[in-house]
Length: 222
Image (cartoon, rainbow, N blue to C red; front, side, top):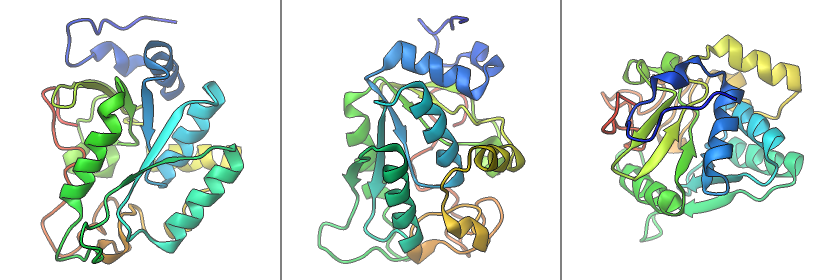
């Protein structure tokens, strides 16, 4: 397949021509087994999990557990592991004092710490970011160097629409989070997520749109 000129770049415009599957194949060829998919059990990860594990059944997948995930998210987690015969790695973002997170006391800082730990042993990571999700993600590159963490960050679905995602899920009869059927376009922790289009249900009633996992890196906005 085509090669990408990533030797000295932080942003790889060539990657924009790749399909989602082509970019995943490239990431696997270049980085596996030091590649990981970050999974939050939303519809985008349903697609990416299926694509990635079709290409490489031993690919690494991890999730960040805040301790306050929806019951539906945990059920989806179990369904995914059963479907693919895998065990998803877990990185802990629960409160150290054992008190649950609330909308007023966000888990964001602990989630960022957990992500840094998850990426400590990899050279590349795969995310479900899509440009259509929010204005903060409108210029998400398909492949960019996250210089702060020292890894290559791939967003194979960056140019996909909601329709594209649902069509793939239907075509392959994939398990997905049932909260999507209840109006949750974006699904985070139970205390601070409501139904809503795009990411408007996340931290509803506040100006917050991101928890810190995907703040811009040294490349174009991610």
